Image (cartoon, rainbow, N blue to C red; front, side):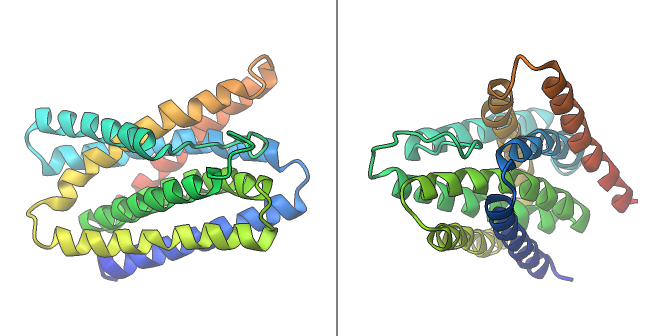
Length: 253
């Protein structure tokens, strides 16, 4: 299967799973907020695991200059930081948390941020599949595990601002379609730039590290931080996320 087809299939599967997860978690699981934080814990481990176990080793193999790899990782972290600053992209993973409750612009701002986010996801997934199927699968899985709590957070914002269940799901679906444009952009640009996908890998690793450390881990600290059982559970699930990424190495052999 070609990298282009694999990328499109990965994005479509991720989008469908996210939408289905939102519907069943929101509509059929009363305690979904607690379950969502379990997903956030796994997402931390999967993002860090993909960055350190898959993306960075592959980048070091493809780019002989270790200093350049390190600088690209830092650039990736700064890039994601800048995106948050420029478009007020706020990863709210707790649907019970609502930023600026009385502001009418929170929905369009959240939607624009999610469109950029999903566009970058498309670039990341396409670049990974351009390197190898195994790296593409690992990165797609990391994006999927992170995407579900992210989408639930956005869903919580939409419904809090008066959107119906169907309207909120449509907004999530519209924003998810920007991933397809990210794939198209990557293959159009990547075909004209030598080693394009190799340079994207450390940038992606930096972005994943930033998301895990800056957005997700602080959310875990705010969730029952005084509960020892909850803390142990979070640590276990983070390790589980790393273990999942480690097990995917078996596909590379």
